[in-house]
Image (cartoon, rainbow, N blue to C red; front, side):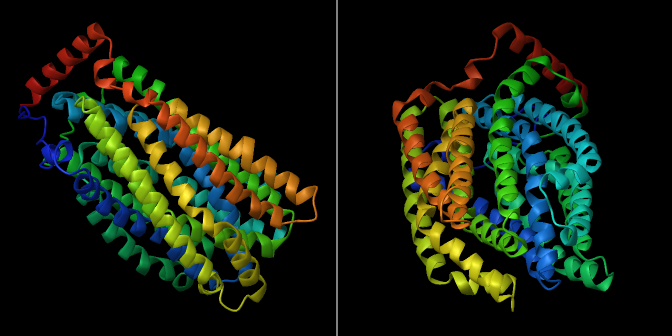
Length: 480
């Protein structure tokens, strides 16, 4: 189906994503997404590498700031997720003219949300750090890093939204190219701002702000240009009650899901801070390594969501199920192998980030020894969560997150660390137990098959959809 004038060009690989070998379709999306996510994690890794040269207090400052930033990002990320889901299903169903409308409305919601959260975050930063019980030696650096990160939120949100929309239409190479360029720039800016300009930990946050702003600017230019599946026009930014209602129904549970995970990280930091700066730094380095390790599973989950969404939109439910099963298996086996490697080289990996700090190296490697062999369960659970999101079952994904963080991980960590002889090891052991149980729950929910009924493109109210389509067509006529 060809797009109308001003509607943008259809993605070239749409047919191959709906036909042919499942593994080939999955890899076509997964490999560029995984590479982009690996490079995207370079922001945190580059920050951690250079900030580590400032000492343990600087590492701790970034470590306690990241969960707060992640929490606010999570609160607003649901709309990007909703946009990606709707774009994927409309592409699969052949409703190309509605893809641009979904993209425009997603941008509108994300911009409003990100600016609001940025202002709130800057204002509440001191109080949030106070609630976490951050030590005086760490507080000043954490506050500077956190406030600059809050100011950068509109750019971080915006580029994340661009990536989500591109995944939905099956165009995954452009985000990879943009991320590559901005990460390379960050390699130069980080040491320049941290040491050259003497900005310390604030320099790391400022370097990220600059590169994310450039990434968003490039992404918006490509959307307006309209040669890669989406053609953004001003009329697409006018509030559309049909989309906003649908985005709220999909996006709010997704935001709760991500926020539950982020808030869980904050609460875990609260537990960790009670054991001192060494433990805080060990937790920060360990979770950074874990975040890097699960990037392949995250990329696989994202590609699975896009691919399953398009196939559900096209009515190819059995193919969607085969994609889901294969994705979960690849994630389980792949991350299990990576977990063994992490177990073997844990001490060397931690030492890379905090060279010469023997206490942090010992504590961080011990954390990884306890958690690494259950990484495969994280991967399988993430893959299946991608399936639920693709089907619009964001409530299921939300419940999984709530159970994982608030029924399992935090209560276990609290009880084992406070009421048993394990001490801080009780926090570490809560991770593998949670990983295994959550993966089992996700598998049971997947096997029930309710997600197979999630054809969102057919569920819109017909009269409301007709009104929206008339507005879209009128706008296209004005811009053609």
